[in-house]
Length: 420
Image 1 (cartoon, rainbow, N blue to C red):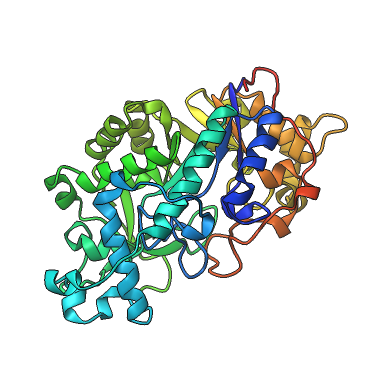
Image 2 (cartoon, rainbow, N blue to C red):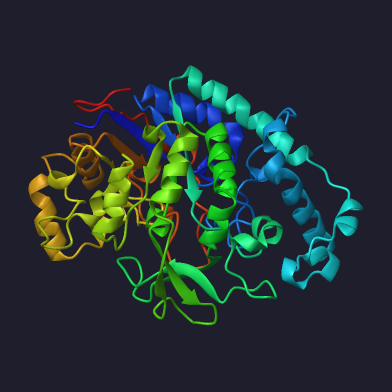
């Protein structure tokens, strides 16, 4: 039986779209017996609204909340680079850093010293965030953040640390990140984010990654590492390719980096490895060697005849966190409505009299052997496709869903064996 339960809801999905509604949301889920609030990355989104290809691996999106000015002493590693990047980009009319004047592109110290920067937006976000952290702790709610493994090419991180990324002499990537064809997309997904120069990261003692994980754990109680398999191997796609089909696997740092991240965290229990998609056994072994929990998604458990499918309720083990769906899935109600007969036949024996499909899936998660169950708010509210957060491979129309308070009815995720 799952010990802990949580709700997946991004800050932008709150009625206000920002932290003004955070305390009320914390009260709501606490009263429902929930102990975890998982959200998507809080870094600035890209031009399509996606927080998974951010121009910063460290900065917060100030549009998510503003509060009293907080001290930023712990953020020296990244803060000035981000503020400079943001200011120059604004002055250059939004051009990518590779098109800036040479002295700015190549970070000439004299040119950078003349630029005035203002940290008030980041400091005001941290003021609002610290209030939410304190309030959540008082209500017994743990905050779970999301760490995208990659960052955008046009980012402060790549501009400030070119040696840490796979770039040519002009600062352009020959290959970009993505995933091969899979459940989500027949052409795979070409994310366009840059790939790491792992030897350079190792040579600097993994400093960039140490700082990144430390920043995440100042913000959150738990961290989900998105695309964990990228630490084992990454799908490298020619930058000029139309889709992800022509990519090749590149080796990642494997144990060397994962060991460092666990060391920085000080506790493997606070790191969750997103290990969805095409996952070879070596990735699973890497995760298990460091005692990290993986993920199972119930929506993936009923579409094949593989008796070892790790997403089937009977196969979900204690070292996994079970989800009904994720931000990349259709809502469970819509998924069910569009189900083929083969899927319906597999699921019907699990449905109890009087249950909706969402209630069934939540119950299956709570009664599984997983240590934790996380349910997207859309599934708690039993919403259809209109509430889908993201459709992978589609650039437009995502990341926009918000709920309304009057539509959120009292609920409970405290099932047999669960712990608030």
